[in-house]
Length: 193
Image (cartoon, rainbow, N blue to C red; front, side, top):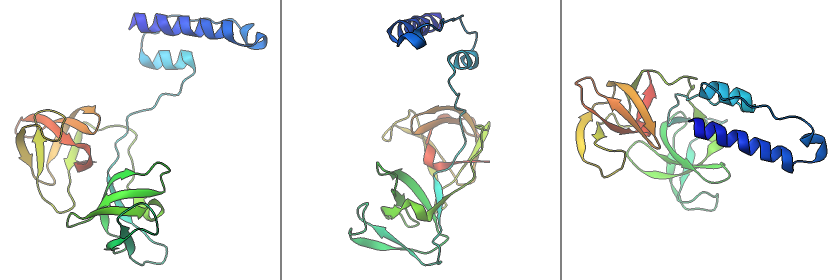
């Protein structure tokens, strides 16, 4: 970590040398930080706290009508079905501009909807020590040996099971189940308790 802090200090010093004269005249003072919070404060960078969110969304149209599920993220795409207003869906990803979301609806069908008609669940500002397993259909979730989709299944957990949070790794969370089994669960199936 000290090497990292030293590199940042050197980089800031080089930025002052390469900066215009008005900025370069400001002295760069840097002392080693004792924590990531202190380092962020010294660099004037806002820290982002880990948050506890959910991949579940609710369909909410202004007139209460059903929302069209499409094959592609545009209004000319084939309609795969309709999602009744107030239906819970699983958010998978969004397109680059964020105007469309790929969702999975109850029954397992996947398609695209306009994001303006999806309501997020409240998000906590802290990752809690425990999370709850949740699926659209109430089925079980696989706990895997490593954070990859085809990793060995070490256990299955029923919807509603409360697990202990250990670590986030990309799209996966390392958990400890009530019976002591440790493994990885897809983030989409974890909600705040």
